[in-house]
Image (tube, rainbow, N blue to C red):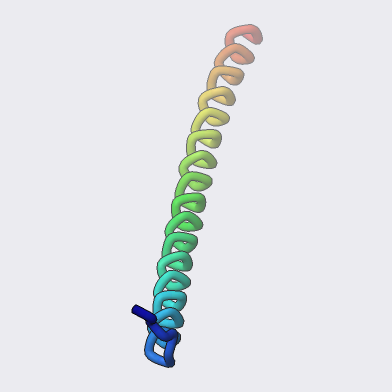
Length: 66
């Protein structure tokens, strides 16, 4: 049995490619959003750590000045 690759299969292949591209773009957008969220959380964590370090440093400075 011979199956011809006519216009219908070409259109179907083109639609599959478009669907795959859409899915990839959505995945990339999701990953980008995840990365932005991670960076924001990391920045907050580091800022909080810096604040704690600053408070400890101030405590030691005040203690040593007394």
